Length: 205
Ligand SMILES: Nc1ncnc2c1ncn2[C@@H]1O[C@H](COP(=O)(O)OP(=O)(O)OP(=O)(O)O)[C@@H](O)[C@H]1O
Ligand SMILES: Nc1nc2c(ncn2[C@@H]2O[C@H](COP(=O)(O)O)[C@@H](O)[C@H]2O)c(=O)[nH]1
Image (cartoon, rainbow, N blue to C red; front, side, top):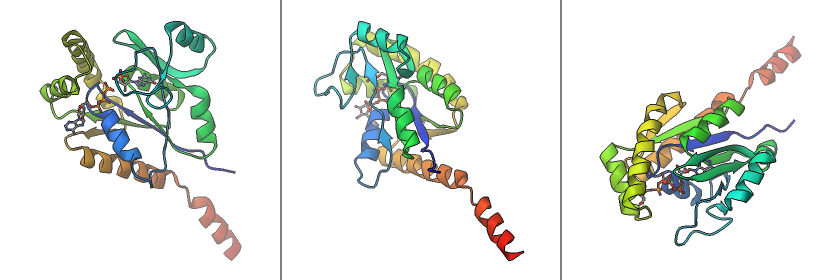
């Protein structure tokens, strides 16, 4: 029987660098994970492409997906919906491939309930002031939205102890290496070789 893939959830406050870290990981050809593109009702930022960065939806379309059970998880975050398409995730895991989700903390909590054996990694900022600087430097939010995201960030950081691992995103390369090492270690931990040895010992008897 084909082994199922591993569900990897990268979460953490807005602006910590989840997208930057994810893009760096996926920029390498040897990366074996499949990225699940989220749905959102947020408007595209300059340069964002529908079907690449997100599937951009109206509120009506998103609420229809919720009512049809098409989302593995969803959350309303600073005035917009964000959610993960359930069919894509389940099918890709069934195909034996690892799926990588990059989502906020409320959504990660819901995924934990449905996939308790997923791998949950919290990306933490070096400090709150550095987090605020990163959101502001990105230049995508108004001053009011930066404050809203910082309020959320304080709540989210309190929940980091619920994760399997916390990785500090001080330097992007270092954070990526740690995440890849965690995933590799998790695969080794799950690879059960006992049946093979039991069989060998049986043959010897
Ligand atoms: N290690 C780092 N050191 C300095 N700047 C960083 C680092 N990681 C990311 N950044 C910068 O911080 C800003 C926010 O990064 P990014 O958009 O990846 O965050 P995010 O967690 O994905 O945010 P959101 O959840 O809002 O989408 C970007 O301008 C990015 O270039
Ligand atoms: N619960 C979910 N959160 C998601 C999903 N996709 C992205 N996100 C998170 O939302 C915030 C805001 O994102 P932004 O692109 O507007 O900056 C951020 O923390 C994302 O990680 C999802 O499918 N579900």
